[in-house]
Length: 115
Image 1: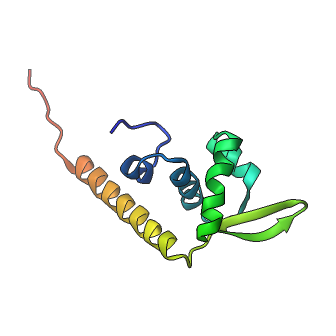
Image 2: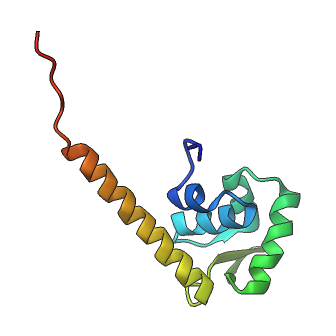
C-alpha cells in the first residue's frame, strides 16, 4: 500500500473507495453535521461521484439528516446503525494500533556512531 499525505489509517487499510471516503470524513469530524455541499468540498470529490454513492449511504441508514439550515439539509453518521458501529470500532482499533507503533518507534534507542 502506498501512503498518501492526507490518508487516514482506515482508508489505507480498507481502500479509498468513494463510500469509505465519505464515511471517513464523518469519522474524522464527529462533533458536527454537514451539508452535502460541505462534504463534497472537503473531500474534493466530483459531485456526480458523490451523489452516486451518497444515495447508497442514505438507503443503508449509515447517514441521517439532523436539521435544516436554510435550504440545506445537514447530515451526520447514524451512530446507532450496526455497520457504522463496527466501522467506528475498526477506526478506533486502527488508531490504537497506530499509536502503539508510534510509541514503539519513539522508544527505540538511537544508534550513535563513534568517531
